[in-house]
Length: 246
Image (cartoon, rainbow, N blue to C red; front, top):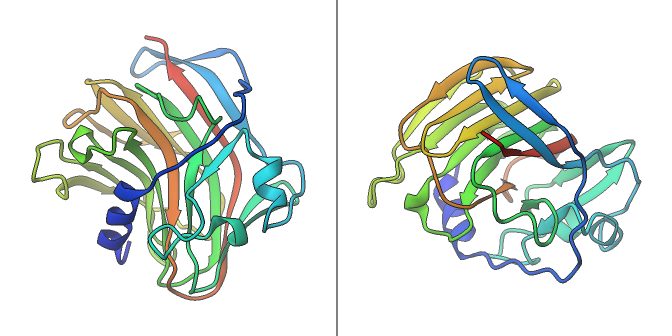
């Protein structure tokens, strides 16, 4: 995605805060035959309650969405850009304000050590802008590993990028194209077994399995969109996270 370096510096510097009590959502376990891994659902959000931008969305989804403070890096303004209507999270793309934040409860969003992470999304417009859905170290130490899926400009094909965990070489990554389009609905899943493997799926089909530079420490599941490009919308139908059981 264009201007990724600018987004990276803001990501590392962001400070998020929250004061609400966590409310666990979802239950049950699923097994992945190809890896024999088991994941237990710990969180789900389907954005079924309509909520306007500029306050109502943040209040309504306070147990599901932890935004960057408005004005972070002079780039991110989730308060004015994000709303919910007709069963989707609507991220407005206007070429002037971006949006970024973490999915999950105020206390539960920061401690993922392995797990499955799933989002169903599409984009309209927004050419020259793009999105990155990220598993980022809660410590903000880049060499603890970064997983991006999906990530690219909206006019391009969504990619996966699994970054180097060698200090000083973090910008290097294993990168694979999905071959699909942001312009139609797709479900993007990451199955992360700490220190062992990361498997990437689109609509349940495996795109790639990566076995090097696999994180072990706590990460958060989040997204960023930039403050450039044409007008448009990023729509998110649902988000689900699962813990790694074994």
